[in-house]
Length: 67
Image (cartoon, rainbow, N blue to C red; front, side, top):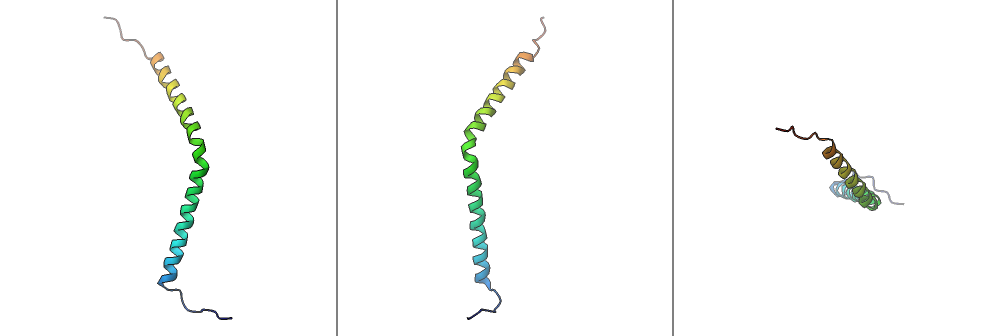
């Protein structure tokens, strides 16, 4: 069995960093893929809440004083 007891060099560092970047990018893609199907639902609920708040503000605003 042949073992390499030398210190890691620049090539090992570049390979390790590249592996870490790929792993991080994979995790980000998985999270986006899991959350993406819920985006239309949350956008619809957000639009509905915005419309209700906007409508209630118009109903509560006092009318200007008569001159």
